[in-house]
Image 1 (cartoon, rainbow, N blue to C red):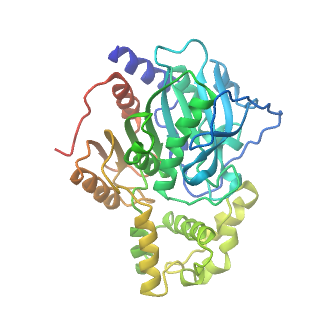
Image 2: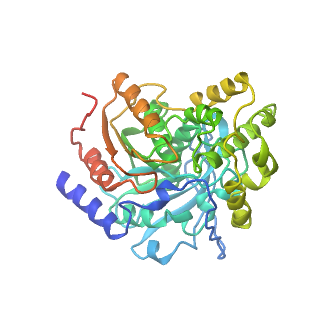
Length: 397
């Protein structure tokens, strides 16, 4: 059973190009939105309730690309409730046909950075902002998949950018929502994500006890934004990379939307202050302006102006980081030592802390690899092993 499961998963994903899908590592830039043009239809939900994971609305997804639908799948765009009664949008998929005993095994997927505005939710795009091939691969391999947009993306609200804790809860409640829309799914699940989603999947593993009715089997995190507090020190020193500076700008804008009392002028100077609105954009209309504004960011344009301001920003980033507590299930962490978005030393330290907490962690630190080119082929095999009940490798020992 184990060998068959792993082989089917790996082969199907390789054939659909999902072994190292670039969409996993989406980073601050402008997403290529492909909006729907055929009308959707509402989906009736038989059993729902009002708690976390309950459905606010559900509708069909008639504009998915043929490359996804050709093998047959069930699809729904949903708005569901998450922790704190926040409404979150996302997309849900299951294979067609008869589910295995116990239901389709579930993967909750955390996407990489797409932006911080409502328009930046993958479920609003017919190709899910590049994640569609991954959906095709997993459903063809016999898996149900839940893809949260994260709160504030795809549905009104404030997106807490790089807040692993909030995004982790969104991933867990997406699994609950999946079960309300498509009841033939299992309660056994794995969290998987890249970049922003890598940190979210890690947090979902730590917080899995929040949903005791679900059985978390593990989390796979590629190039995870585990703890980004190091951005503060680099901003103060003027050593942010060209990739990190626009990322920090989105962090600050996101925090200011969540905390209206935050004085952004303590964190922005020079060209960043002048170009703030252009840098905050995420849609195609602002692509050129944001790209040009990013090129103009000076070395200290994002440096906190006081030590108190630096300490406050560092505090917020620490509060959004992982690890915060021991994980519920085994973890796989894949990252490169040449990442220009997330310093490898930051991930090294997060992994070290996870090991100190007693977590079971398979560590794949890849020499010479950056943010979007890490080799994620081991993820498919690792996920298959979790569902097959194989013992997990522990590189902490």
